[in-house]
Image 1 (cartoon, rainbow, N blue to C red):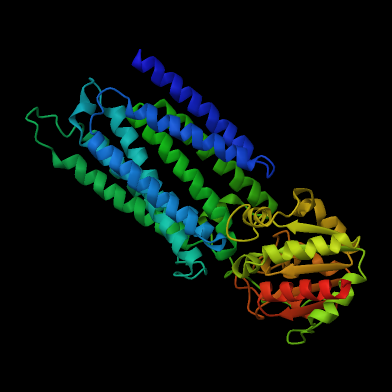
Image 2: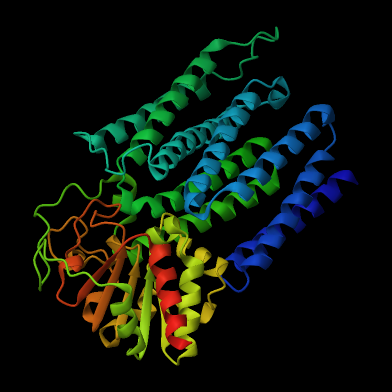
Length: 477
């Protein structure tokens, strides 16, 4: 009876997780999707605690309580600009847990009651291998996003052969580990160390592989990397599910793994990049030609504007497109941007937002910020929905974005060649809000700043937009 109820509970949780993913696919249903996920996880935890044989409640309950408090505090205190590195850090927890559970299962005599142990040992190998890559890769991603490690890709000579060597070495060690059999084969209860040594060596290689894979990826591709690490965490959870004979872990891991992989593929297609190049290649340092100047203007010839000058152009515009970027997130300017949007729309000016797939540091980063500021969903458009309208746009406001509006992406041989960008320079006027003329996360100069129809508004984005809002209100008074 207990096992029947457990299966039913796991089935209900699986359905809720599917509904959660479906809800998270749209801004309008994202909150509902989160609720489904919370309920599904609560059911899964309670059901797992009722499994016969689990009796260490004096340890489990306090551990769950501490984990819940720590998670709550982290989520409540993290700034939206720090959300990408928090997600990467949480992925590392999944990888570390998978490795620890793999070792605990390997060293548990109760797991060797069957006649054949090869399949079980293979499951442990897969779980620990993917977990090791996920753990160290996520830690490096966290450090890159945090700014503790440079976003410039580490391109070692023969790096692809190094990756291949680490992979082959891990497989060879895995075969030796599986062939060693049960660590309790002698029947005395003592642990044979041969298999443990092979497993430990394989774990070390997997961890090194995880570090090198992410270190070789450049800053502009970090949103895809975070998505891929999410996929890895799902597959390692699925592997743990097979190892522990837990159907819910298998289903949940497969959902997370496949959805993360599909999202990564979609993002790579949107960037016109191969997903294999993103995972195994470098970005931003192998250009065969230096950045070229824009079609009009030359480096160094920046034309500035001020709040009053920009206000006049906005009031004379029929339509305005706002391109948000990471700089908007850093300045926490999304609420001021929403105020500006409402004031312009009240004057009959058409305002829309253009969202690039890799704007920010996380898939959907800009969408979350705008939703937090209550920007209407129907005016927030993806790149492919609005790019064709940019040549007919009166004023484009680029707020803290850089690489996603860089025209050299359209040039052969440039470091970001082939990456689709928002072609704001095709419109009547482009105004770029930036603190300075520094390059973006990809480390590539942007000729848009020197374009004939571009004006630069230097300063903190929140201060600049707030001043614009105040001036607009004063003009209306």
